[in-house]
Image 1 (cartoon, one colour):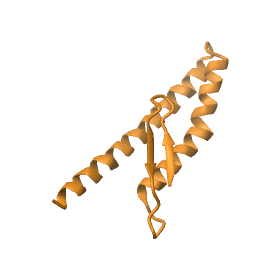
Image 2 (cartoon, rainbow, N blue to C red):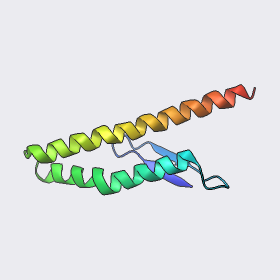
Image 3 (cartoon, rainbow, N blue to C red):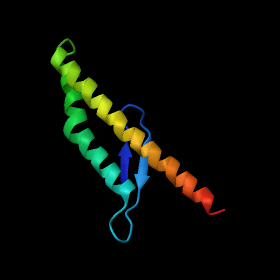
Length: 89
């Protein structure tokens, strides 16, 4: 099981790993966590430390755009899962 907590909204997403170790959702949340730790958090810290530095602000804005791309894909997978689950009715 992996959890991803969106740093802006606090929304928690969870995904379990499949028996074959190939869960797309698990991989996506793992990558999102790595991105937040390695890119977003340092950019947010730098922007807080130097709020008038245009380079720090630009780096945070770029990180926010990529973070939202992760969130978009997570939402897409959730919608796809919902559609597949309905097909079983």
